[in-house]
Image (tube, rainbow over all chains, first blue to last red; front, side, top):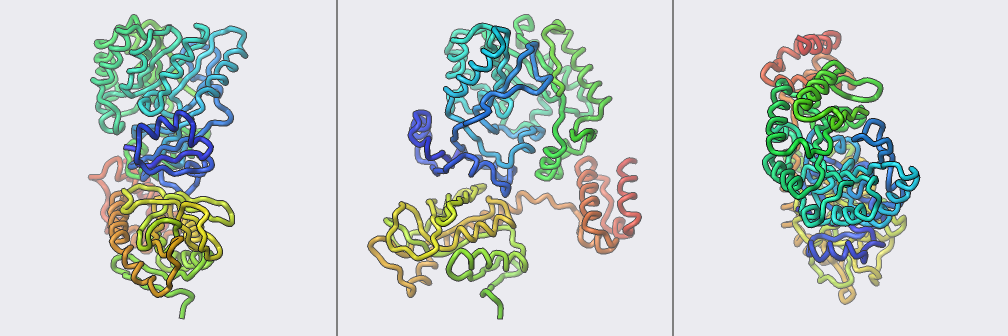
Length: 331
Length: 232
């Protein structure tokens, strides 16, 4: 899948890069001084790059762990996110990354040890209170796991941390091997994102089918890992209520609701400048011409519709779960 | 008499401009051609030195470094490269010693610096034929013969980029320029009209108005009519 790998010169002999060279072999290997030389130039076309995304290997030098946006939480007061990877191998048409980044290439930050130190420092700032660390905000936590070994490293890192330092891995992938190889930890939640199958087939290119993700979810639950369910963003289609009802039926028939760690609902909302870039990339995409409205520099579904969808899904989910497990991410 | 020799196949939309030697001339040639033909993709073709590669080897560039400024360009691969790729260093004076294991030319960096103002990096490439190396000096009289070696790669590249271009076009089923000219729309009004028509096409393609219908409207009525019809 990956034909071209760009590597920061200073990282050429990094052990993770050496392992990557062994694994990928005779691809096109190109040295660069800084990952931003390849990733950041303005004159790039996200849509075209999505056809043959390259891998850019770099080092994250600052802002390794960031405060999560207000409302991005699953019950904790202190919430942070970190990104070992920018962009994702899936091609979800609603994804805000298309508007946020100029390039569709994957940027992989290999300095995991620095991330771990930054996570430990962020935890230490809260005097022993529970702190949540979210991965998968700028990417998919597990989709490139065979190349990055990310989950393996951070599962081991969080095994050494206090039990109230929580890690959320968020994914649409079925790469769960590193979790199945380890003993489950109560402070790591593997959260899967879902949209109804009809929506997924139409707008989530490359994402494994629902049935395969349910299998992965079942395996994790049987193994003892806390799992989370994420309906973020909710996507509007004319029969959204019927589609989400069917999705919830299928999901909760497959998993044990009593052992679900948390469920969150998120709305489709993104900065207007991202929306403008996305519509420029896909001008004929009906998703971008739906019942949307722009207010205060943000584009979202019309307020009443948004509330109707959130409340409608929340009520349906309450048939399966107590309200303490249900969170609404609106930021 | 023009500043550059320019050859064109207007029907195919393909142009060849002879830039001459050096990055300033190559940058100027890109601007010259952009003003006349507005091509969608740009390919810098020429000779280059390399310390080791045999004379006649054809390579594309995956990194182009301007030796003077240190600035680097990374042509992006939305298609499979039709030839092996290599680093390319653009220098200001001819070199016979090659300190780096890379192609050395005198144009590509200037070409890219200018072309990136007219296209994204997926549409900008460089194809180079090795003309000299540590053992063989550059010979001007061999350039024609060497360039002929690049033609299969060039043809394949043009075909693949052309196919790519076709595959990402989302044309509206109208002659937008004709409607705009008939109604006397300004540039801003044309953009608004295109946005409205795109929206209409995305949501209800079967009910799109005909071009003839649109051409009956003038500057004052066209946009309000579109908005009204879309509300209905």
